[in-house]
Image (tube, rainbow, N blue to C red; front, side, top):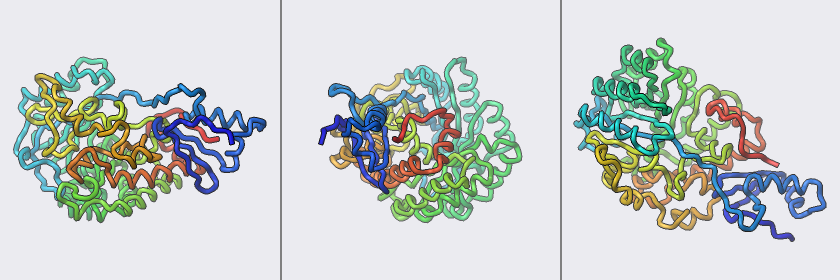
Length: 451
């Protein structure tokens, strides 16, 4: 049999008489009926060149021995998490803020310097996405308003997105009008269904009143839901998504509780991986059936991205697992800078401050840069989906095991189940997943083909 010039990172598998090729480094794929595989080595067949060209286009076959794979990973906008206050009016059972910050707030001086620093950050040239959070930022309402005015009052040609994360209990009509005037998106921390929310946060009635207010003020389409998924919620993602869609919300982000194992001391309520995966598949099926259409389920869009574009939101800076410290930073109430708020405080290094900039990135790199290039461990380097996953969020890994340089088991289980499930439906389905992705990302065409 003729030896074909496959890229080193290419994996293949067969399911239901279709052979799938996946380039784990470039994040590209191709698929064909299993019976077509014989035409790859039969140069007399009319299908040979067509199949060969498709696999080469999708970086499955090399056109020359010296050709290298270059992933399509454009530099993303600078993501800035701005902790204006650690104060909060709730006591959520899984709060990740340390007790040390729960009575602290930024001063106006630190706020101004923080925003000045962000606009001077070299990664800001690709745009800026501000997320103001707490605590509960509306406890320090004047400080929050000042932050919005400083950001929106900046003379710049940059594309600047601005959102706040709130628990929704203090939101007023005046707040909504102010956010509308200044193009501020609202992310409400809400656990999807009232019964779950009351158990975790005990405030669903006030939140539902805020949701009704957003509907009445025609601002619900600019509002998103951040849903922290506990163990008992793991099997109810579909019900939550339907509920939110019926209430007119624009999107939902499911955040499995930190995400498995110790979960910052809450292992007894951590998400159940098997139930979460099954429930996730229900949502995918509902998208294909047209039952979920207007609601953006960000977790699905994020996993469709590499399959439909060859791009990922992680691993875009060489073989780093994420952009923490580069195109993603967290600014604390005291002006200190860390790489990401998802990394537990006890191990997250301070990499700089808003007066002097970032000057200690090496300490962060020790946490999130793999011990071996392109791999967290040997099993990851051999995985079909490694290029899409990079072994999961390092902050989540640290919450589970005390180290960012470990494979995150929840993410691993999710990716190994959902990526082939999605790919099979892209190839064999009704096209609804592709339509859903294009509608919610404004993508005009796909970068992948099947034979």
